[in-house]
Length: 143
Image 1 (tube, one colour):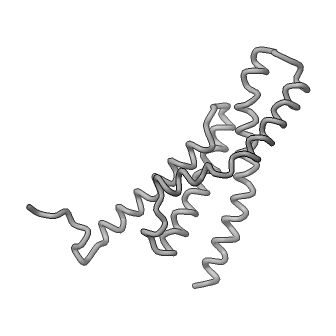
Image 2: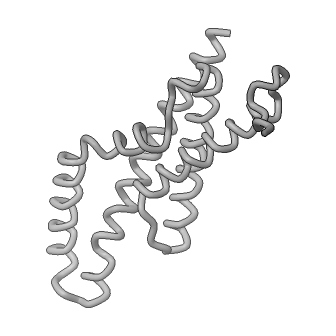
Image 3: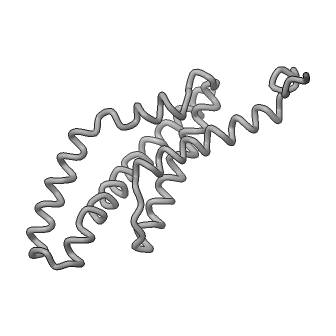
């Protein structure tokens, strides 16, 4: 059982590297889109300013996922296996979603996509837990 979770963690690590590349490129494209379209400056100047903006954004965004963790996602309500399932679903969905949006040239927010992927994964797993409840404790109360 431990080797399965180790495999999932290694896969999540590889997905995180790919997600970082896709996410940063998405943020850079969103950051540069208007400036390139309006021809506000030379391409080289826009690239330098975008690189500086991405660096500052990555440096100062240390608390962004705290919002998702405390407001949407309550990990203490799930077992370890369920958490691994949620994290795996979120990472795969995030990489696929951002890659599709970038390929089609559509703007998207990496933070908003991550929050809603957590919300969706948690919601579906909660529905599965409710549907598989054999104790009757998760059933609606009768008045």
